[in-house]
Amino acid sequence: MTTGRAFGELCSRGARDWASYVEPQYQLLYETVHDRLGIRNGTRLLDVGCGPGRAALLAAERGAQVAGLDASPDSIEAARERIPTGDFRVGDMEGLPWPDGAFDVVTGFNSFQFAGKPVVALAEVRRVLGSAGSLPVAKRPPFPTSRAAQAKQQEFHCSIASSSGEWRHQLPRIRQRFQSPNCRQ
Image: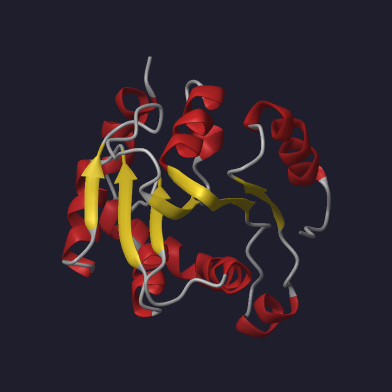
């Protein structure tokens, strides 16, 4: 079963609530990843599992050309409302509907662990990344209770893989970093 068929309907319910109550809790993570990757004017960014589009919105505010994919039609509708200039599509991460080399960066905040076929999903990411592209894979730690605590808690689990590397060989490194308490490039 594909990721879209498995999660599309389930995740569609409550997309607006997710945008209002959950996405704001991820803002520091989105901003930190965008800072580390140098997201700026002209960056071509695809957010896989974009949900209602907050991470894409923050990238667009930096001048990035954004696109997003999600299994949830309601989430894609919300993302399109937030960023009318973005290219947001309903679909499966195992079959990205963009041409080879279309993006400089592909993000997947809280997404790739839901792939029905993770190796296929990551191979698709590799396909749509340009030759010098990057894929940050990030998992946010438990939510701190205050903004001050959130600012103090800068460490999160992530890995940034270069599209020029062999993905199957990088998967063990990504898994290891997901399990480590800190992330370093």
